[in-house]
Length: 247
Ligand code: NAP
Image (cartoon, rainbow, N blue to C red; front, side, top):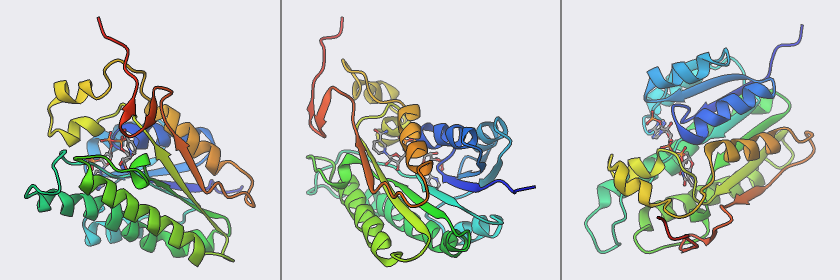
């Protein structure tokens, strides 16, 4: 009997990662999900018969312990990520920048390094990094987040160059506004402020992004989807958003 292909999804406790767990299971993958809130990953992954493991991508030891429990891997979805605050460059917010870099850049680096040999050994590997339109656009107050996503984009593109000739595809998914817990995290639990981010427009859903990830993953092996940029119809750039008046 053929063993199922294994897909690893980081940030599987919420939002895009949780939706991706279900979508990839639907494609026939055995899914291993990781995040810091293990109880939530367990609930999400149990629904599709997958495996939940604790993971903090900012902690090299946690990444190593996680990778040691991954027996083989065809697909790595580097989805774990966050924005913190909307502080200007002038403000003293280096700690937030450090956390965003540790998670969005070095977290992707650590996970990729930890699983790359398994992906190559699979003979048909794939790394899908969840970037953002913030990877190539900027907005006032978004310096730390946009800088980290720009850096992650550079990492993704460098990886594609360095893997040329190896059996591993590299894809970047760049969403605009998606309604998840992203803004609640950004505004430190202030869900009222977070909800205003989506006032008067239909944002993307986590499932919309999971479909993009599934599309890239399910192309034939010789087809590399380099990137998918996906936004709500009501969003032209990070700061050009059309909002209908709310009643
Ligand atoms: P979300 O609902 O807040 O989910 C973020 C996930 O990342 C959670 O599962 C969280 O899990 C995980 N995570 C955060 N820090 C982590 C760490 N140190 N180690 C392991 N996991 C960690 O937000 P989302 O919108 O689904 O975000 C997913 C990705 O999409 C992020 O990379 C984000 O930058 C990107 N993105 C989001 C949007 C948007 O508008 N929502 C737009 C463009 C791109 P734990 O807290 O349990 O660890």
